Structures are given as structure tokens and as C-alpha cells.
Image 1 (tube, rainbow, N blue to C red):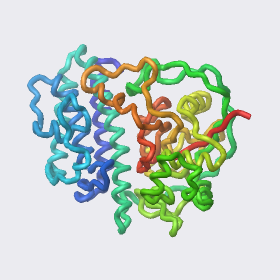
Image 2 (image 1 turned 180 degrees about the vertical axis):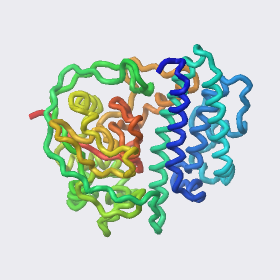
Image 3 (image 1 turned 45 degrees about the vertical axis):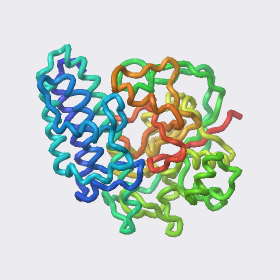
Image 4 (image 1 turned 60 degrees about the horizontal axis):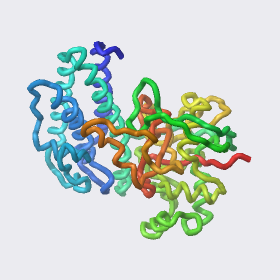
Amino acid sequence: MPVDDREVLHQRYARVRETTRELCAPLEVEDYVVQSMEDASPVRWHLAHTTWFYETFVLEPHLPGFRPYNPQFRDLFNSYYEAIGPPFPRARRGVLSRPTVEEVFSYRSGVDSAVHELVEIADDASLATLRPLLELGLRHEQQHQELILTDLAHAFAQNPLRPALRLASPAAASRGPGGFVDVPGGLVRIGHEGPGFAFDVERPAHLVYLEPYRLARDLVNNAQYMEFVRDGGYRRPALWLADGWRNVCEEGWRAPLYWVPEESAETTLGGLRPLDPEAPVCHVSHFEADAFARWAGKRLPTEAEWEHAARLFDWHGARGTLLDDGDLHPVGRATPPTDGPRHMQGEVWEWTASAFLPYPGFRPLPGAVGEYNGKFASGQMVLRGGSCATPAEAARLTDRNYFAPHKRWQFSGLRLAEAAR
């Protein structure tokens, strides 16, 4: 986009902000304030924090005479930017009854007006500086759109009334071709390069040597995972990494997070639904994905293998369910015939065998925004591909999601890999 194309920037900003509001439209005021566990945040906090990002990194440094909506919000809605100030403890976000939901929406409205003012009055040189900051803020908000949904799904799953955010009747999942695709190895290039948006940890592009391998055409589905459960997968320590077995024992894992095995159902954002045997299994941890792969006599792909295969085959053409489709759950959407893997974009984030580490030559962004990703490169595993809660615009082949290996409240699943024969 040319730096003087202000109308495009106005429209893009308004569209992303409106999408967040639309996601919240079905909610009652009580839904905005629930924090069902330490990892999740109230919807109200997500709405305020994404607004705080624009206020802190865009408006305060660049809009002449700008005054914060409420100076106390600087710490209250800070997530983890220590250079900005001490954040309010994450685990206690749900104890706050104020500011009210109405005041948070007023905060959003005020900041939106100021952002549009800044875009309008900035000269071309200033707009060239602002544009990447605004783009980072918009991509950040799209990440929080997904988090709003995953955090609501966890809260609703705790409720015996089994509420639904949006009632829907997704089509039955399509049966895939099955089997594995042969992928050549060699010296391959992964990571983002060239124009277009990418988060800091997607750069720099670099060379990786891969042995030839085989990648499953389809994601592991509910029927396949049910075989693992029925075969005693959660009772056999030999299948599990030590820390994973500890979670099985201490937390009583017996199935994916939202399964209700006695009813052959799962809780979803559409309420309690029968398990679709062909739909991708969802809400499993890295430990569960790894144990299933071992049980199946396979393994998880590395993130370099995943990205190399996505580049070789039609990553966009074999697209799965994304947020824009409105299902709010992986449904194993039918795809055109393909010789490559299906659903590498969307459906579920795919666990890989790779630890989340900086790429060779990584440099954090300057200033406080340099805390965005790089400082979390410890104790996390990489997921790839996007999910049914990822906005289509935000789905990128090089995107590196990451979570601790025992986390399973995200829309996370798996695809198998094996050595070449």
C-alpha cells in the first residue's frame, strides 16, 4: 500500500476492529468478565488490551497532544511488556469488576477516533513510520480474536448448562484420501523473506537440511484418536514423555480436553455436539499428539518439514476451515482433489516436534515491541497452519504459533510423519 493511501488504512483498521466487536455481539454482559483459568483472560480484558496496544505504541509516541483515556490502564491492560511498566497479574484479571464493559467499549471508541485522526493528519514520512506499527497492532488484534474464542470455549465448557456462543450445524467432515505423501529432502529454505507482513520470529529466512520424509495427507481425526483412547493410550506410560505422563496422572487426562466420552460428544462454541468421526481431533496437547504418534508407529513432523511440504504443495488450494467460515470448530471441510496434504491451512493448529527457538540471525524489534515474541523462546513447542478460529487474512504459511507442551485449550491437533521408505 502506498504510504499516502490513507483511505485503505482507515478501512483496514475499521474492519479489524469491527470483526472483534462482531465476535462479541452474541455475548451477555456476564460473559465478558469470566476468567475460567489462569491461562485464559476475560473477553473484557482482550477488548481493552488490544486497544491499549494502539494507545501505547501508536498514539502516545506519535499523536501530538494525545492524553491517555485513563493513565491507570497503562498497567492494568499491559500483558507482558516490562519496559512499559509492571503488568497487572495475569491470573487475577478475572477479579476486577471495574472498569465496566461499557467503559471498555467507550475506551475502544475513543482510541479508534484518535487513530483515525492520526492517520489523517500524519505527513507522508510519519505515515511510513506508523504503518508497520499499525499493521503489527492489527495482526495482534487478530491473534486476540482467536484467543477470545478459545478462552470463551474453555469458560463455556465449565458450565453444566452447556451454553453456546453461536448455534450452527456444520456439514459432516469429508473423508480424505488417507495415506502419506513422499516429500524430497535436501537443503531447503524456510522462514519469511521479501515483502508482506510477518512477525519478528518468522525471520530471517534460512537454510535447513532435511532427510527425505513422508507426511500424512490428512489430519488425525476423531475416529483415529478414539482408537488410541480405547486401546488404553492414556493408561500406558511407555507411550508418553515423562512430563506428559505426569500430566496424565496428576490432571486425570483420559481424552481430549472437551470430549464427553460417555455421550460420544464434545463441548464446542456451538454447545454440546456429537463427535464427528471424520472431523479433525482438537484440543490435544503436544504430549497427547506425541503419544498418539508413538502409538501409531509414526512421529510428528518438525516445523521445517511442515513448512517445506506446505511450500511444495498447494497450501492455499487445500484450505480448511477458518474463522471467516463461521463454524467456530474444525469440521474437516471438503477440498478440491490434491496430490498433497489437505487442510494445512486452517482446521487446527498442528503440533510439530520442534521447540520454539529463534531462527539463526534473529533480531528483536527495537524498543518495547521487541518483547512481542522473542523472549518466549523457552519451554514452548511450535504449532503451524492456523485453525478454525484464525482469520483468513491472518493465516500465513510461515506463521509460528507456540505454546507450552501441556497446554490444550487452543484449537490444536496433529498430522503424522515418518521417514522415507
